[in-house]
Every structure is written in C-alpha cells, then in structure tokens.
Image 1: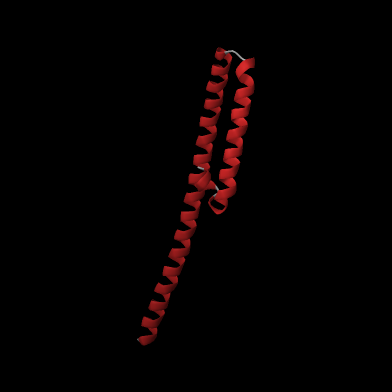
Image 2: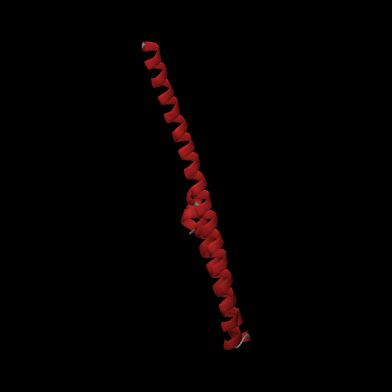
Length: 96
C-alpha cells in the first residue's frame, strides 16, 4: 500500500512504516506487564477493526484517483483523435 500511494517517495514512506512499526512494538512491550491478556485481546480486536475500515477507505480513494486519471487520459486521447479526424475531413473537402 505504501509503495502505491507514495510512489514518488517510496524510501521515505517505507522508513515511516518501519518507524511506526517500531513504535507499536514498544507500546506493546510496555503494556505487556500492565494489562491482562483479555484487555489486550479486546484492544487488538478493536484496533484491527479500525485498521480494516481505514484500509478500505484508502483503497477506495486510490481507486477513485486511478479512475479519474484514466478518464482524463481518455478525454485527452479522444480530443487528439477528434483533431486528427477533423484534419482529415478538411483535407478531403479541400481536395474536392
């Protein structure tokens, strides 16, 4: 996901990913002795649900961006082909 969203700056994106992964491990280590297993399990299930929803929104936004980009390329392409067709029609009419 990081490589797709931050394609122009993938090195910075992956370093941020590793940083946040390390922060999560430190937080997990700290809470290991403070919270019991049941509380940690509920916390992780909730965190998993939130991350699934956020991942869906990221995928949805990325697909909308891709569709918009493809539509823009299609409009540009159709405008160019229309200009070529108009040139051919003009040259045909001038030859008559």
